[in-house]
Image 1 (cartoon, one colour):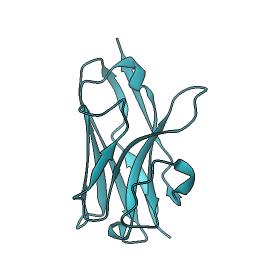
Image 2 (cartoon, helix red, strand yellow):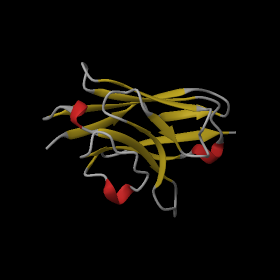
Image 3 (tube, one colour):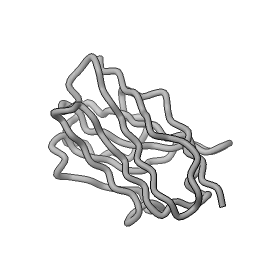
Length: 125
């Protein structure tokens, strides 16, 4: 079992950048594909970005393509989400999650096994 903890959330003005981190403990994160998801008020959890075990393969949700970048440092057991050009519609709780299959390109939250507690990101106008 791997424990995931998000950090780096907070309040940011529209147009600004923010970087989230997902640190793992109790396991080797390189064994898993990792995804970022988000959930706004009264909304279902939606896929944001994913990355394969090696970091070479990345994929994104349509709403963040070209603005967000996912990366990982397996030596540090950490996955990052660099968010640029933020707008109020990006306001949500952001979660990182690990998928058992290291090559998974799944966008479905139900297929991910391990989840962090979430980090609040609020974007003001």
